[in-house]
Image (cartoon, rainbow, N blue to C red; front, side, top):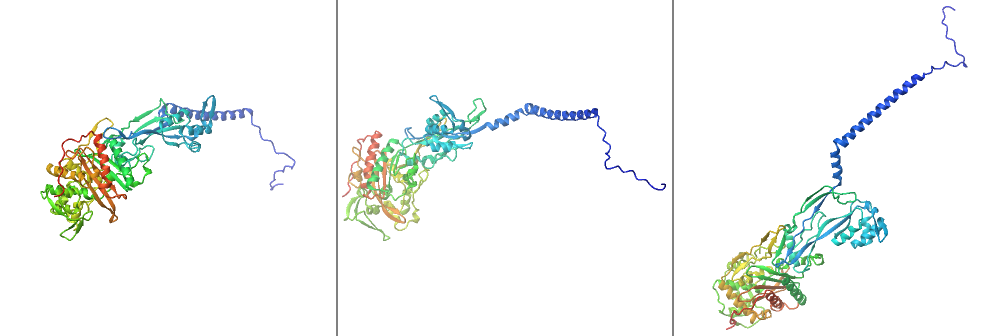
Length: 612
């Protein structure tokens, strides 16, 4: 079969392929050993990494990690400064701060609550709710809403008194703690409330309340002080760790503010004006008591008044001081200024004689009338003031040029800032003389066509009582800071307005208004009083509505120790100052003189003839 290629023989279908060669035992053992060594190497490598990390954690990074852990346990809370007190002139507390607590809880820890009472075990959320409600004096529903849940921080109660917080502490509820806050209290209630003002709720737990009116607002920066802070380490249940890290920056307490107000006199004056406002159905009333020698405001009593413990109980209009903010036309009490100017300028003497009709016809055709129709009267200048004659006042005052009239009005303080800087205070309105129209230039001489506050109306009388020297009114006697350093508010003289002789003449003339004139209801038993009634139309929406009834006077007349002014706005039962306000003057002045131990003195003015 040459020249051909032979194909390999086929295997029969039933013939098996040759078997693989078996691996020897020694080869398998070697393979296993190699794998074991590899695994050991890997394990040793991993262990070495762990060991290195352990060395790093325990050695090199231990301090950093401890610091990080500690930082998670640290908490900073405010240390609130204690707000300063407001005191009366004798150091009696009128406003003070008291300790209060804001109670909070970590709700996730409350289920751990457990305590034994009379051998009985109380535990769990329900027991905590019941016990906390009793301790805080809140409802079960309020307590449940505060304690049940998964919040890590929840308010339980605010403005909590210390004794209630101590009762809660004794329960030992897990996760419950408190922040120290403060509340403001006014021990005398509504006494001087319109002067004191009030403090609003704090914006956050880390802040104090802020003064919203009166002295609380005016002296906010002095009273508030400066808050501090406390950094401490707390445990799982929120408690301070006794041996943990602490760092405290102390608070600087606020300064105390002492007023010139006398609490007892203020209380009496408030009672008197409140009773009269109700009796005559008036819109409001005010009593101002001044020491003329210093300008100290001894009482600023008002009705309606506000109790600073609950300022929301009255309308917003009644929360400020009307004696310093509400303006009115003073009416005939301003005739004191016209008389002082006329006497000082030498154009009249107390006993000069005049024929006084019930109408005054001005050169510019303006006509003015007295309060009532009457036949021509023969009056001395003392009689013109005693009987409060508008027409007689104009006869004399017309001899003063308009600029002189303006100069005396402003010199006595009308239309000028008092210097008190009290919140909401008005300076009044006295337009420049060049802007007076044909009627105003006459009307200002009997207290219309201009306006002022109750304090501004009283201060001209205080100037006459003080020998012609006007003192600036003073409401703040002193402040005392947290270190006990006291700063007195100086007594300030504004200016001499008239001579001592003129002031003496005016006082003598004004005794006639009490003895025989329009102010007879202002008499104080045992004392000679000098004063003046006022009855003016009350401005309203560009016109007039009702009357402003006033009486302002001083005693003892020869050497005055006190000046008292009473203003009643829009009385409905009576309207004149001699009827509505004079009796309140007599009541308050009588009390004030007795309280301050003032004796009548033997030296009194001789009465001047009112007619001829």
